[in-house]
Image (cartoon, rainbow, N blue to C red; front, side, top):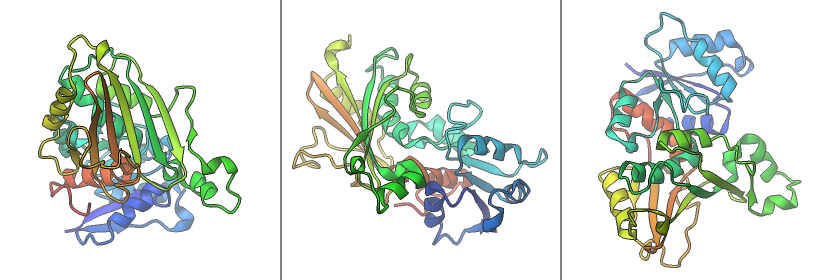
Length: 317
């Protein structure tokens, strides 16, 4: 029997990408809503309750409303939420299975899974293992810089960047969230177990998809004085045997022979690459991923596969 899938918000960037990833899946039955009923709560409720798994690709308020549409006696339908609405809710599994065996098991057994944010995925992939390994303390003043393609801004930003009247400023990198109020900050702090929010400097640039999230560490500020090798070994041990998260060779001399770390290399995939760069005094940690892949739709599909008890790489590259 095929698993019934409903994507609430299929017309958005993440929803469309999830739908595309199901193209060749003969184990799934997609429940589709009529175009003129996309905002009809009764029709959405019918499809949500008819589904085995519903993906929420909606603004936060709409995602919270969608959960209330589930019938009280419905113990079958599972929800995978791609919005920010439930990422710090302890009742929801956090959809980053590579973080630990506990994370993967909770995804497998849960009926409610929150997919991580794209920037948050890159940041947490670097900081969480180092907190666990006690290489950096929970009160460390973490700073992060990141660059992403414009697809992360959704349909409105895509229309501007690809439109005939593209503003001059959009031909260059643009910093934003300058007030330190980016929507990913709460999950970045909570999931990593940090005492304070990190200082976060996101940049959107004039290319479609892919991102690099960087965390610089001044080792002289750490009591245990870890070396570059210590960082590399901790991250390598944490992600050993993982299919989608790979720690690249220390220093990047082989994978980055020209000295440049491009942000769009993994576009179209569910892969993530982690780089340990710099030297013993100044360590630069970088996580490269596709903001629409491991940072959104790919992660959502991976979580679905885990929830279904099948190979988590099914339908993913």
